[in-house]
Length: 480
Ligand code: NAD
Figure 1: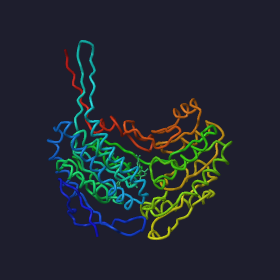
Figure 2: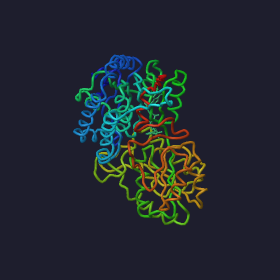
Figure 3: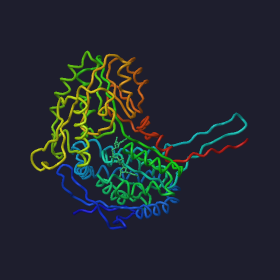
Figure 4: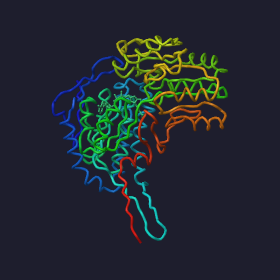
């Protein structure tokens, strides 16, 4: 059985304990590889390697850092097929989605920050003729990056790229549920000639090795993407140590559809916003609010298109909904469908697990599910499910839909569908959400600030925001 290895000090090595955990293909439910069960000892080794690499890497010119990162980006592109297949097997997403979306985006992340760093500048604040202030932005040192299982290589590189571009050295941990592409990525970094110790990848369980990273006194900044509960635990440990923290957490995103939307386009895009990647994207819309005058028409068209989504083998080209990433998550999503029923919801389609024909009969598949008839304050509409389950409800006025849309503890993203531009701006201004998409969904420009309000996170990633996070600002004031 294939063994995934840690990447420490430029080498692929077993964890100190020599213990491994099983890694499952969710489309079959079968164990197909082993992932290091690392612990604090491996974090210490990774830290030592990173600390040793830091003086040289932080002094390496932006142009030279950029060059090696561009090689990494090229190698991701060259290995697109292998990476996409690995991601699909490890995570359960359709292969076409990994190939057209996730892996190209991982390449884009590296490319974007490799070039951004060459344009990064800091400010000067002159005080008339008396004095001038200028800001120095220097790398922090050894930083930690922790990522989840839903978009494995995409989110892993989204953190690592700005961190190393800015001159930091990194200890990174991918999710234990989807470690494979991070492992392949370590090989790519070796082939590209990334100096040893600049990036160290330690695999294993969150509460064991992730928490050891967070608790390490010399890893002074943590960039984390994952669940809100985990984020709270990380903040609890890191805050008294005064670590810099970027927390990208959960969501319960509303989709607001007004009667004056472009109907056909909206139905099609809302289906995509609801069920792409089995609904396992933090940005997916899971609460659909439809203006009452088009509610029945929208519901019929929407449910019709959802029923037509093919659930099945992620490796087949016509599969639209693949496997749920793990058995634990599969059980969680099904338990929320039961909760929706208990809370009085009517299942309009889906609502059950399914066993596709052929090799995937023992995998973790759930039919895309639409629930009607729930109040906006019930648990189903307040808690993150993070799977192929959406609720649909009608609204009468703009005030009412804003109240319902803003009623959760989350505030990550939303989409608004209307051809009335004035209304779109008005609603966007009133949404308590880090991202508002108008007549589109998941349209991403890597320069824009990315992150959530309320319990969806603290801080912003993307563009200069990420480079600011991964640098320390120092003001130098010179009296003339
Ligand atoms: P999770 O919080 O369980 O795990 C995320 C990562 O944290 C994993 O690598 C895990 O091993 C690690 N971890 C777990 N416990 C830890 C601890 N005590 N200390 C340090 N590390 C620990 O989340 P998940 O189930 O992997 O991912 C799903 C969640 O991620 C959802 O809530 C989703 O909304 C969120 N998410 C948010 C964004 C965003 O950008 N806001 C993007 C993707 C996913």
